[in-house]
Image 1 (cartoon, rainbow, N blue to C red):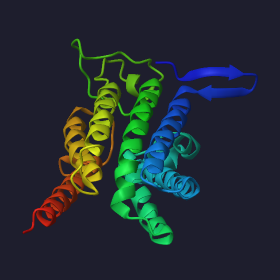
Image 2: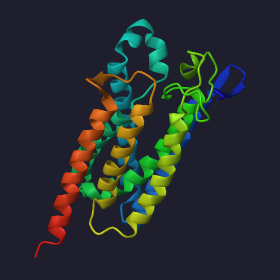
Image 3: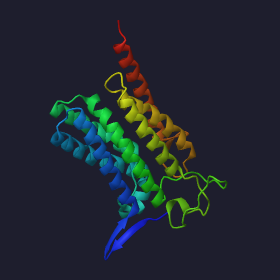
Image 4: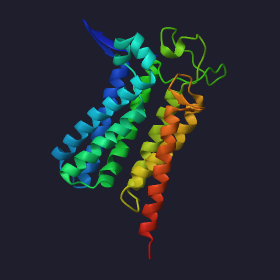
Length: 250
């Protein structure tokens, strides 16, 4: 772990924030390049991306505050400085995207295919940021898989080794990024990349949640993210089936 990247006088650059910024930048550059290949004007795409990112961060923070409301009431400034729930950003970002494409008259699935690839890459960098801060950590594991975090970090408060779920997810997201890029060149219908993202990441997120050790809100025995994953899976499979049915309809 290395929570502080460097300091310049009174200015402190945190590694978590640096990786989040790097993720947004790389995700934007990749998506912008793909959008240009698909004939979407650069200024229109940049405007859409700006508002999707803004609402994405707001949604991710809002869901975090709803889940961690006790911590927010006790430490409001600390909870505002850090902590996001990725699925909250996806939901609010997609909502913003829906209204923006209606304004610019761009096909939703065409743009969603592009953004799914950029979001996946950006998310991978974000998880590396989580690792440097010590959030989004796994359950205690004293075997070879466990890592010991500093005592002053969220993952090290217990003094026990924990599963580095941040690194596991970051590695998976890099693989998913390249898989979606490959699928983009071979897709059979518009929306296939986006729907594949919903399904594949939904399955992975549902499974890795069982390894998480931080509090994330729950209903019965499922976490908030697992419930959203089930919705994502259901929608992904349903629309994927409908698209295939329409494509092969005699």
